[in-house]
Image (tube, one colour):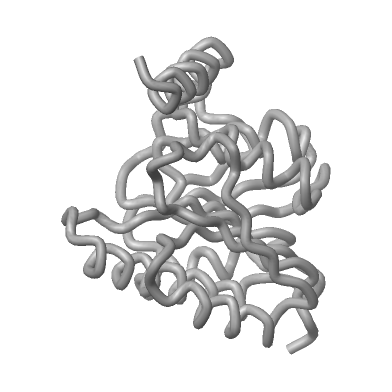
Length: 200
C-alpha cells in the first residue's frame, strides 16, 4: 500500500472515530492552528458546507457554543443532531434568495469555504470552474464580512489562483496560500487565506 493511501486512511479513520462526516475537517484544523481565524463568539458563514465537517469542527472547537454558524450547500448537512449554533440553508449560496437570508443573519467574522465544483477529469476545465467558484466566494465576502474579518477558500492549482490572490490583496491586509498536510499528495487543491479585511 502506498504512503498516500495510508495517509488517506489515517485521516478517514480519525474523522470517523472523532464523529466527523469527512476527513476534510483536518484541513480546517491546520489552517486554524496556523492563522487563528475564528474565535469563541464569532459569527461564521460556511459556504459549500455539506456534509458538515467544517461546520461541526467550528461549532465544537472554535466558537465553543457562544457564536453562530450559517451553513449553505446544495446538499443537506449530514449532522444528526444539528448543533444548536447552526442555521442550515439548502440551495445555491449565490442565489438571490440565499444571499438575502445570509445578509439578514450577517455580517460575519469569518467566511470558510471548502467548496469545489463538480469535476470533469479535464484539468483545464476543472481549474477554470474552481476559479469561478472561488471568485464568487470572494465577491460574497466583500459584502458579508465585517471589517477585520477573515476568509478561507479552496481553489485548484494550475488555473487562475494568482488572479484570485491579486484580487484578495485589495480586500485583505494579508493573503496566504496553504496546502494542508491532510490534503492528499496527488490533490491539486490549495487554500487561500485572507486575514484582516480592510475597511470598504
